[in-house]
Image (tube, rainbow, N blue to C red; front, top):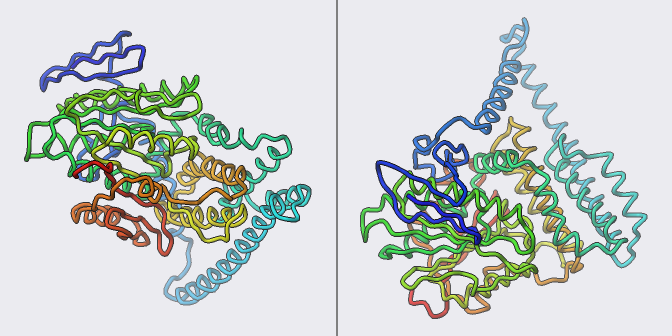
Length: 500
């Protein structure tokens, strides 16, 4: 195997061997012992990723420490002092039930109060009778009632919405609304250490099907669309750590029908402007993917394509090779899409249409509409959406408050801030149209979700809490829901001139 990194930030895997692996770069790089090449548990649950792990990582230590905490709490709860359980059992149960009912009523009342205060703050910030001083007073009161680290789901969620509203209040007076939209979420994103980012990403996967549902649905559609192709090219709008692709590589290598293992090429879209941190992160992702591909015998190459400085996409910047099956992959759900604006997404999808792709895979959050429009209505849509997400995460790790707190701090807090900033900039008047509807409006054709893909989604949900559900809202779309609330959807498309 040869890996080359040039000034265009490209990584190529030109050939492979099942017995030896040789790595060469323009600057000597060794990946054999690189712990970042560990993809344990980052892909399909049916694959034994342990066989590809090179060494123990910090994430495993984090999980074990959290599990130890849970065990200690259980022992304390079950180990009690010298109480005669036979004589006091019925009394204890009755008391516990009564206490629980009182606690639940108290929590519901406080939660409702928090919702009313948040609505009042949003109304004071943007309503017809807006008053920045009133908004400031309400936010001060909210800060006294909530904390992002303690309390119920609603209290922690309210803390992040309070923080987001506070940012809008401080920015609105100084005219920094645009700054909040384009840079606010990204600033939060980069403040977190890379170790926290990876740990939070892994925890989010373990706590819910939120990430895997989108990745697996997209990957299954890709596999079905390229059954007989020898070369596959995927243009990935937000590759992040690249965890979507090991399971696809494994499936390509292990498939029994069709031609030999096809060559897979991935082009990752990176931020425009100076964005060196983004470029460096994508380079590391490329190295991990190259190393993993070599370990399983998957012919593979990796490239980067920069957005322009204004975050727009130029289709001509993507290198196309005749005979490749082109796939556009657009993941817009948590934790993806942490900093790019809707204009950037529209630019990417519009440009993708000119490339005449075989397949377009789109995963996006399902947010509303519930409210009546305007900032307050869109604000309530977001509050309902993230409330359902918080509840689902608590069901995933009910005893592990530190795990949830890490995911909330790294991903949900910045996501909430970015979402409200975009709504505030347009005063909630921008069209709240799902990207799937946008694709249909510009001429993309839907591709039916297969029965196998639907079954795979149901099997995945079977690994998690019973509150999750999957529904087929259209022939080309699967929706992941938590109880009565939709969380995200995955839809499959092809270009207008395709015969797929």
